[in-house]
Image 1: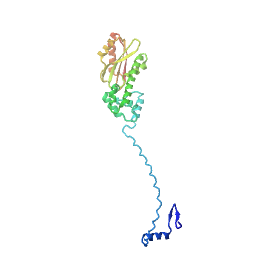
Image 2: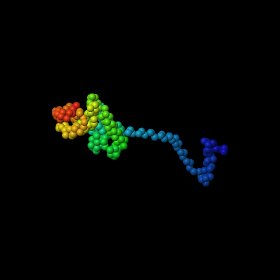
Image 3: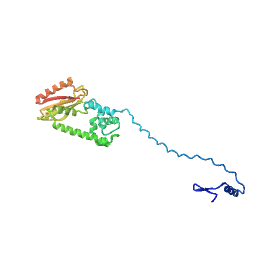
Image 4: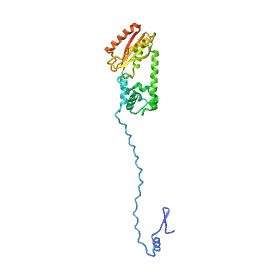
Length: 270
């Protein structure tokens, strides 16, 4: 078409042809020309939304911040002994290695109350430990493994501890009283080769009065073939023997002389 100019792939008509078409459609009367639409600004592309930064995770804040490290340092500072440790602190220290990144202070208090102390926790049935809220199978198994290890250690020590090895003998005595919350006394029979046997508990009580049950002690000795014995008892505050300890030691020697039994030594353990 001679009057059409190709533009952008379509056609636009010249002014005269467009007027003729409009006259024909309106019965000869041309409509008022339309105002040219104001040119629109090219629409700018909408920028993509800015990435939303995740809010930093709130750090857990509790009153026991740094408590784990303090308990560990306390144990190290005590030359790897449980001196001045409460029952729940011992359990708490153990649980650090099977319940990571969690406050176990309240849990330790709870299970010590439930089972009656450190030894009660280790001796508790596996099924009862699992049932404790917050403890779980892994921690219960860990505690039972420790208990069995202690029993195995005790048995091995009994087999090799001798009165001739002062260092191992002292360690053996300390081990026997680990976890005791009250003063108690124990008797050890010694065979002819100097081997120290398993302990017999011969008393339990308070530091202000004797914990030794003399009748029970003499019955155990009389019913054995031992010619030598060791005595040991624990103090809550100090390992220094009291005046009463000295008196009790002399009394034991006086009672043993007539039956030919020798009291080798009397240990005080804290």
